[in-house]
Amino acid sequence: MIKIVGLNKQQLNRFTSSEDFQNFPFAPISELREISHIQNPRAKSDDILLFLAYDDQILAGYLGILPDDITGKNGEKFHFGWLSTLFVSEKHRGKQIAQKLLFEAEENYQKKLMITEFTPSAEGLYNKIGFFDYLKPKKAIRYYFKSNLAELLPSKKPIFEKNKSWLKRLDNFVNSFIPYFGNGKNHLYKITKSLDEKLEKFINHRKKNPLGRSSEEFKWIADFPWLSNEKEQANYLFSSFSKHYEMFWVSVYQNQEIVSAMFCSVRNGHLKVLYHFGNVNLVSEILPKIIKKYKVKMMTIFDDQLNHSIQKNKSPKAIYKRPMERKYLIHKDLKEKIGKDFDYDFKDGDGDFSFT
Image 1 (tube, rainbow, N blue to C red):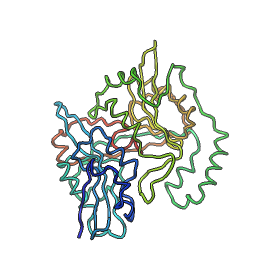
Image 2: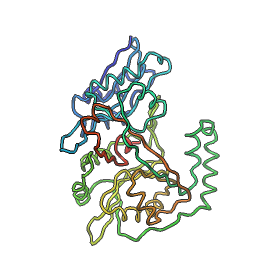
Image 3: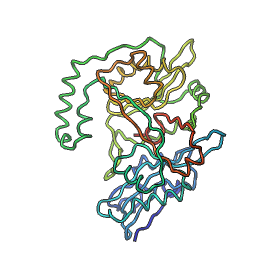
């Protein structure tokens, strides 16, 4: 018999240090995700953050939810959940456990669900269930500045994992001959790990997109990451460790005032501009300096405006570029309530993308 158990903020607190958790056949959440979910400013006390599926009292699968809010055209706010993780153990497959987890999430969040960054197999499941519609996908460009075979090839084919040390050596050799092209403009800028008073004031006056992140939420994202530089969560399927990972703010100044800013992450040489504010041309013009400083090998941008500015200014210059796409699914009921012509205007860091 399949039983679904939901954990809210209070129930999730110290869950990873409990005796039950230690005895699970696999980890349904990491310690850092547990803490981050609890600290989420948009998570209500009764929101279920983690659904556990038991098959005859044995943990068989789980589904993680990241609560969020979106404001519609008329100012009405909708509380919803991003599906963040979904896993069913191979030993328990064929019992419709994933479907049961999804139906439980649908009921708990009153049909207010969205999904992005899903695998093709998960996409097939979501389509089969039939209560999701597609939203307009976001187009992206991935820019390559250095050879990064040690990161790219193992993710495509597991056989390359055994040769990762050799691929790193090859990358280092090739990259010794590849300089960074373009220096960017000499704008005055500052890199900080946290928000100071000026930067906080600057971004709080620029919350025009429907998800409207505040400084409080950016502090949450920066202070409670999901990736550790120290250790990997044992027996956990999703990302929990990165040897090189950091988030930071870049503020661009003119006449001692902030005129542009961006919130970035770099993971193993991969730069993401999660959010940007102000003059987009100044953002693109300062990117070459950030790329050099952090020895960036590749950068992924899902923002049309920023990609257009990069193309127009020819800065930063990449040795290779390839197009990408991020799909979005929304529950049909939520889509109808928000309105079929609504512009969702998602930013690069929305969903759980800021954390991964």
